[in-house]
Image 1: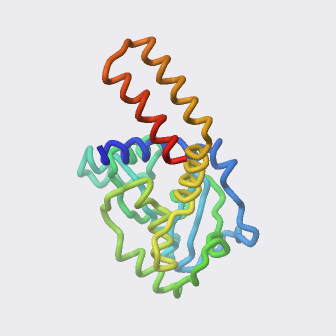
Image 2: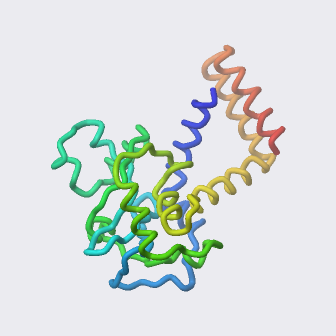
Amino acid sequence: MLDSLTFLFEKFFLFSNFNIFNCLWQEEPESAVKCPVFRRGDLLEVQRTLFIHYGIYLGDNKVAHLMPDIMPILTNNKQLIKPVVTNKRLILGCIYRNASIRVDSVEDFAYGAQVIVNGMDVKMKRQALASEEVAKRAEKLVGDIPYSLLWNNCEHFVTYCRYGTPVSQQTEKFCDCLKTIIRDQRSVSLTVGIGVMYILCFGVAPSTTLPTILIPFILWMAG
């Protein structure tokens, strides 16, 4: 039961990271630096189609970043895995919870977007580690890794490398949004209405009646 709830929660979080949500949640760091010059250990961030993506600059135009990817499940051919991860590969990787910390060029990492350098420094309350320590942490973790949108994503990776503690502000904002929805008692009325319509369409059965009762009850208790 817990695994099923976690699965549904993560899929909802995936859709919550579309640009329509980012435009509501994303706050541009006031002192974020946008420039083409990077130093080893810098934290890089780019806006990709579905989410904000993060990586650690290693020098020599290389970036270490955690990317969900379906391709390693489908093949062991490194030539097929090596090209930049497309959004389709990324979404399928999220669903299968498969990822790797890989090293790509800055151009492949940016995927055509503008790169923000160390923008997270103004949002984190922790002091950044020494640049060489940050880069070495990233290099040490290169390779396959389990993936979770909520508990182990690219933001967790870079915050661990740069600040010593894995956190994800995107996840925290999502959870805050979810709490707001749960605390709004109108959600109870909405789920009751949907449940009644579901029963009218598919008839009275345990598969229709139990969710109609349990979901509004849980929301009411949580609120």
